Image (cartoon, rainbow, N blue to C red; front, side, top):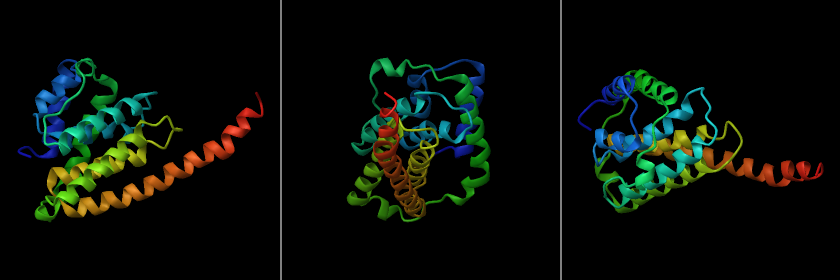
Length: 202
């Protein structure tokens, strides 16, 4: 990536403060091959304390499209209608602000480690699978608080791609396992405990 992560977030924050822009403009600004950074941006709203109902479903589906494009080594593709989706200023101004702030703190830890390993076809498929499943988990209409683990897994795994860092890959794999456990327990609770309880009042 030519720019440092913090510089990319700063550039987006400044531009959003000048005028609204949509997803199509965002992809155009980042470049056709910036799949990993796009997924990081889509995950970042769930690290902020500003909840937006339904946002996780939209971001999860979009991340699925982006990671499919990355795996197929194609430009980022979304339906034309989705590209006109205006980014909510209140949310994304905070996303870019926090992104810049935390990137400045941690980006010096990210570096190319194990590039050859990450280029192995099986490892590339593993990254694709883990990010796709995390995006699907994010898109599910689950209770508040369950969006953070899949968003975090998506972000860390995407940073592993962005910086070609095998350490981030293994960290992302660990987070993925934790989030899979949390989601499975949540779904089990909803179907075995909460749903029968609600039905008893109907």
